[in-house]
Length: 224
Image 1 (cartoon, rainbow, N blue to C red):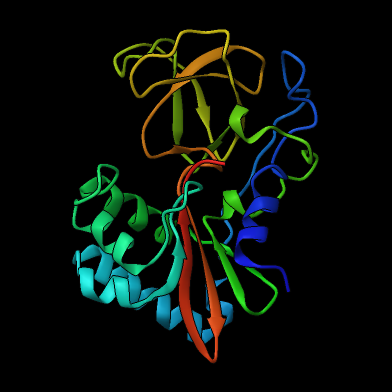
Image 2: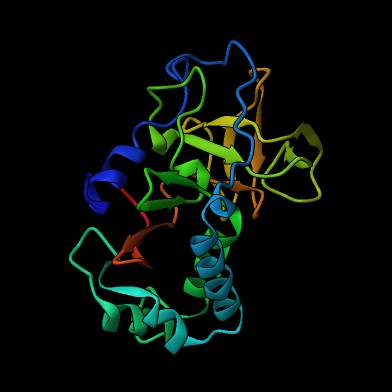
């Protein structure tokens, strides 16, 4: 069985679209939500308790459910004490935004990798049908049935597309503005997206492993 780190190394670059090298997509590409967590009652119970503790901002409980060697960055940040520092806001990358990312990752659902590993969120763990070679740095996933793209990086600007779990190409030829991301829409036109309805596969994700009958979070990481 591959290590947790190896699974994540495979997961990110495996995502998205064969046609992303061109200017437009030939067809709409979608990735519907997937959550296999209920398939294993022991994991379902573990995740439910962990999510509730995260919502309560219960540092001790959350840290106790992490592996002693939990991987937290690609720069050598590992271990429960480092994880605690992040949750308590003692690290410059931690605090309330860190809690919110962990909460979102647990809410989005994921998939089992064999019987010992659970990877979440699903957008970081699955190939998109017809899109085996996409660059994860160029891909934006729509997480909602009722998301919209705007004509400009302004919530009051014209809505140019209604989106439902669409896979979008990030438009690096356009101007970025704050939390808004320019994208190529399914019909080849351009727009801007922002907010919790949109996410990249290389944003925060988590991996869980069952060791000696107990589940532990072994990875909570962003980037590639």
